[in-house]
Image (cartoon, rainbow, N blue to C red; front, side):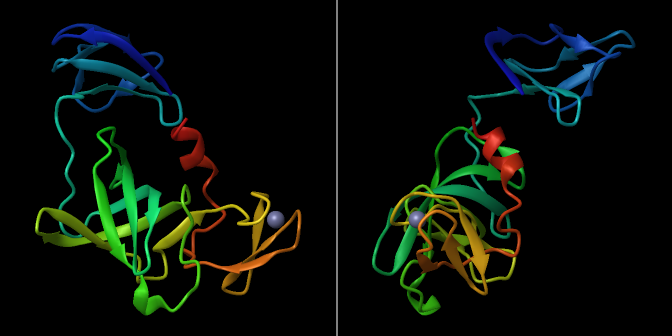
Amino acid sequence: MTLTDELKFPGDQIGYIEEYVSGDNTYDDGNVIRSTVVGSSKLDNSDKTANIITQTKISVPKTGDIVIGTVEAVLGSMIVLSMDFINQRRVYNNVECICQTRHLRKKNVALIKDTVRAKIIGMKNGTIHATIDDNELGVLFTKCRKCFGIVGIMRDAVKCKECSWIDDRKLSTDFGKIEIIQSEKQ
Ligand SMILES: [Zn+2]
């Protein structure tokens, strides 16, 4: 993914149609892909789309949206996620949501810096609330709590491939399929 800091204006050239297809906030004039808005261009080589990201628009999720975020804090009964993706769309404004975890009865539902998928359940007192109570929701990427090594799944827990430490997490069924998301987050 190439993200340029140069600001593009409506009509500005983003890419050639031989190389890319028109993505978000762009159109194809038969020759080149051009911007329809003010923003920065993003050439996504994974799906060959030329997009314009409008940074000024704050992305706030709606109830039912699926978000992927980074754990910023682990409190006794909840975790705080900083959202990186809303419905698979990369967002950059670091909006946070909280997930209740007390009822999961796991000692380490998720650790700080883990990647977690959650579903938005609503807003309360200006806070966005989400849940990780579903099979596909929960931790997508984590490391060993003792040595920060790579972990593998062992039943519903994780086991470190370096030091063999076994730990519990609320894992998503997509745990371990995270490489794409990690590289997109670079
Ligand atoms: Zn370890």
